[in-house]
Length: 397
Image 1: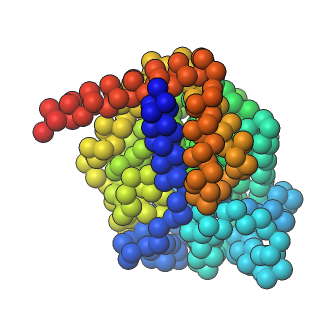
Image 2: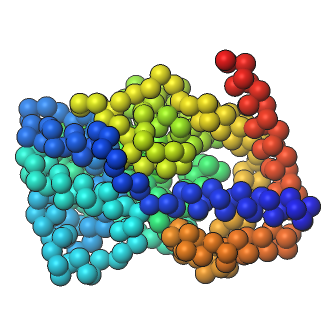
Image 3: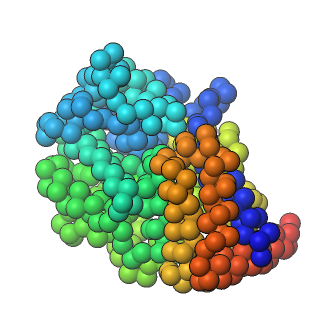
């Protein structure tokens, strides 16, 4: 039993540490930056929004725009002016720096896009960012008005806060989370102020929030949403009510996942998706800036990789056989151990691997009877389902 718990601790630590790695620098493969440079002189009046634009706005939403007037001015501030303010010497030293290591590519995209006609005049408004570690709530959204009658509501994915990652996992065992309700309230508050056509979307958890809000918003607003852009967001397979609501907007959802998707396949509730080629490996493919671009589109592959298919099958089969209570026990055991170790963001994990490992092992060893029972059950299910998934994959050859 002791060895089993320590092994489970090590696996969880390895996964979380991998997710916390910073974005890989480009190796010359065509990516979103090349798209901006090649087509940045074409305005949105000339050519409307496409899948690459949606990805750019989804990633720009990760940036902390506090103090730039994007959150105060209802008319918005142009992207060029926003970039100038963000990179001004005085402001740069006043921002919180947790995003600099992990989201440096998003910040570089802001600087790059602001130089081109297509993006420079975009009005940025409605910025909001909330973090409640006690309630495990992390929410942020930004509006990009591309023209007076074309708008993109971008919801931020999980940032580096432990509260944000706990909230991300809780989405899988709750009918609705406080963060999802904040996304719905945000859309209901801002959509009436945005004349014309609305697009919405996000990356990772941000995509989940966009779909949730679009599926639950009032019909008169829902009818104005042209497309929902889902960049490797976890789904709603454990939520029958949401699956039913999604039917009304299903044809408007565009889902993109990397060829070795290990996030977007979790709780997968969409059969239609586009698999994209990435220069990164495993969890690092979650970084959109590693995805290949071909002209004005992502470069696609026929299907997801063998690794992704095995992970998809094994994880979703395991999750499907867990009760909400069991899954909540696993989540709380993991994140409670982080709090006990004094860890507040994922970068702390990478910097303090030993401390987190010891705290997690201690949490497993001295947990209550129900937690120990659940850990054992989940370990057995994972082993069985991964073995079965590998056998099924061999039959495909």
